[in-house]
View 1 (cartoon, rainbow over the protein chains, first blue to last red):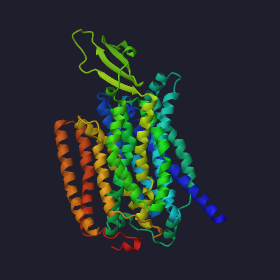
View 2: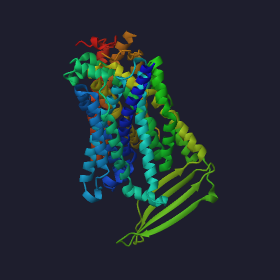
View 3: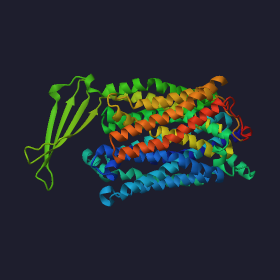
View 4: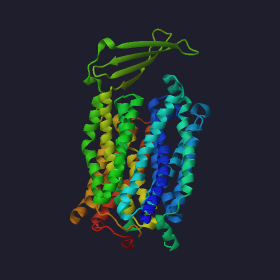
Length: 513
Length: 81
């Protein structure tokens, strides 16, 4: 009776040690994305805010695009020298890069060196992440009993979403802790406080490195090594052998590309859509996501566990199909909840405040007109218009800067939480079982390399570029606010078709080969 | 089912060049509309990143037509080439 209890305790330790490190890596990776706008103002020329945001997103995308290369570099290393030391190395690279981003002086201090250094550090982050996930998933799966692989690896699957949750939480806490006055605290955060979430990372990484140093090598890999059966050239064996390459392609086109777009649409694009298209207040747009993540995260484990009983295929494909069918109505509902055209304004509550500040070393002044509109359902819309009042009476600002921010009342707020929860539920369906699915697809000696590449092309390229491509589509086809969704719907739809036709639903009981 | 898998392979082979054509056409049109460095970089990144993936789906379709997916390997002993 003692043996199983010890085994359970041992696997719990393994899951915790692997998950904590992976969670921190995801946290490190996502704080950059969550602070895209602030980073844009710090590291890129401010002449055009959209260009600055796109530049940051491009840097963000660079972090994603480099992930498959990380998968190749570290995947190969993991199959050559072992899982333990490889994913220890990725953790150190990730932690150091994140910490260093927090130290880089802004564009105004060191000029173009600033964005270049940030870009290099971002590339290092992407490279490290490319090596981390495959290692952690493989490591846990190679310790798990055959009938529980989906359940045990699903804990690793929670880390990406929890990393996002942690990044949003730390950002919001920091944003409000820098001064007793809320406005001053936000101003301080935008000026220098944004560095704190990056710097905090170093402590998390030190703890995680300590935990990982105490871990042992995967038993399956250790056995292969003792028997001298490890691969001499994992890249060649993974991608130059037809019989393995066909499985890599199947994993990519039949599973990970659809999973990637569903993941990033349900979490990143949903938040970006609520903030930039629906114009919901900065903080509300983030807390909506935080609540939805909190409610949905247990389902990663539920679906991972379920996949041990009924197989991985149909759970993942159902998640993709639901996403394809319901994305338009769900996002449409998000838009209509915030749209003031569906509400009646309480006119006697309208407030207009005008402030004029002189511009230093100029005869002109900066005028800010803040208009507050209250609607019958309790929605408060604040429109802030900023323009220059020229000393020369005949001269006017051609295009004043107009910012709109909507504060939703309780009922509408929770309705948005419920909609985002449904979208994250799809994420848990496609993502919960996928680690076990990928592990079972490839042999031990080239598993790290073979599973990492399709995972990171699916998530890094197809998924990671989702917010970027969706934003681009909305700028090309301006008539439809939901046009950005077509990218995700087409990719997930194609993946669903390929998955239905070519994937098998068996659970591989033996991953020792 | 295996016949359907093979026939669908033709679709995947066609999807590759179609995706490359659509991507290149959109890239050229967008760069011509707004010929600034930002636009050029964005579209160059898309084209560079997605062309190898499009080639991947062509290979996938080719394998499907050849019947490589009629039976999926159950163990590494079946990975013989």
